[in-house]
Image (cartoon, rainbow, N blue to C red):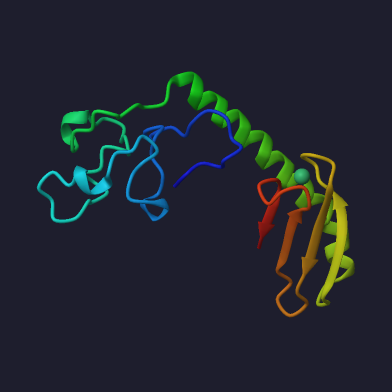
Length: 147
Ligand SMILES: [Zn+2]
């Protein structure tokens, strides 16, 4: 559950140093996940201090000296960014509605203007199931979807 690398702020409910264990054996602050086992055989999600559940205190979790929850401001920054991004994604999907109707049941591709950055956004669809995918050409981190 890492956040988007271009996003400002931090996600609510997660230590700012958290990154998915599949990205490495430590979090971004260098704490080894296996050092957080606290007697548990496995570093179970419900003992990891990284995820901050509402109503819990740090005492309910394995102790971590580097735990740093996001501030209210950081959470707001992230939420605002996410709202803008979701808006751009919806704009892109709405703007291809007519093209989708015209190409129902056909393989097709087109290029639209990326609502986030103005670059070319490549859209393609598969005739057999009408799934679409879109990806901004500027960066994989810009607007993209698969549905
Ligand atoms: Zn873009």
